[in-house]
Every structure is written in C-alpha cells, then in structure tokens.
Length: 269
Image (cartoon, rainbow, N blue to C red; front, top):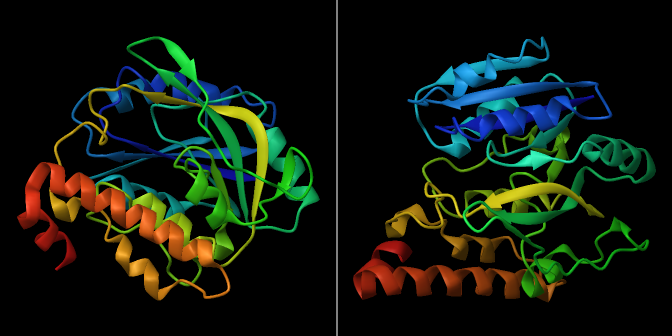
C-alpha cells in the first residue's frame, strides 16, 4: 500500500483538484497524509469537505515544505511513500502503473513522466527528459546523473515514489532551504538505489503560479549549497561531478544577478 504525502500551504484554489485526483485512483489501497504547514487560508477547510477515512490531516506551524515532507515521512504507515505537491494532480492510473512497476523491478525509487500546465496561459508543455532506460518505455535508468545533467529533473516533489527503507538512517529533506532542498534529497537517495522510470504522462505539474518559489524573491542562503555534493561524488561516475558543477553554476549565476559578488560570498561561506 501507498502513503501519499501532500504538504499544504495556502492552496485554497488548488487543493480540491489535487485531493480529488488522489481519491479518483484506479488503485484504492492508500492513505493520504495532508501536512498543513501553517496555512492562513481555508485550504484545510476544503480538504475536510472530503469525507474519506483515508485522509489524515496534520497541522503544524509554518516551517517550509521540507519540514512538512519530513513530518509526512515520519507519520507514514506504509512502505511506499508517494510525494505530491498540493497544486499538482495525478492521472487516475498513476498508482496502478506504480504498483505494476514495483512488482516488476527490484528498486526502491520510481518516477513517472509529467506534463507542465501553465495556469495563466492555459496551455501544456512537455519537458525535455533524457531518460534512457533498460527496457523501452519502462525500466532502470542507465545513469540517473547523466539523465539529469543533459535534461530536466526526473525526480520531483510530485513524480517520485520511494521505499521507506531509504530513510531509515535519518535521511530527510533539509530544513530552511527554499530552492534545491528536493534536488539534494533526490541526489542522496540515488546513491542508495537504482531509479526505475515509467515513461507515461501521469502527473500534471502546474506552473505560472504567483506564489511559486521560482518567481519569489530569495536570499543567497535560501538556495541549497550544491558544492556539498562534491564530497559524495564517485570517480566511477563522471556525470555526478558534471551534474554538481551544473547546479553550482546556475545557482551562483542567479545569485550574482540578484545580489552581486556580496551574494556569492554569503552563499559559499
């Protein structure tokens, strides 16, 4: 069975579609953990309109999406953890594809393809993913770090399912980081297991939202310090180093554009 973890913060206009898409799954064996990260709107009131005993609501003071996901992982009752952001939606066959892949492959990390829906423009785009797998449209990624170096993210906060074993050593999302905290988590779990990718568009990822961290102001320390990854890189996989360099470059470029050299000094110290 699956534990679906949904962090929520002020998504009153979007949370209904998100939760409805979960309850509309072909596979019905799951629990839904709604982690309210201190919402000040009626998001949780909307969730309470669903009279389904599988929905469990936990409320906490605002601490960011990392702390909400970490609490969800801690409270999960089942072995397979499915992450879903509160502004995104699942295809009705998402859990079905996951269940079939779990039975087929010996892995603890699974991911699916996704489409981007621009809320303002009302159109869809399909991100470029470099996903060479061992078995056609569904299989082990031959080199996860090569895939994310050449293409867009594969593991995201709405397309990823992991086994609970991966976090038994205390691994978690890093608190206090607004950008890249999820990329760090995916980097670290991929050191522990192969990734199985399912090339089906099973998640609709909504973009163009005003509250997105991609468009809001940020400080240098809001961005994950990707240079920490160099200590984790293996000389047997050059793409681990290249991906780390890529993330460092873009982080430092964005910081320089907004905060100049002073911002770069703050970021690396």
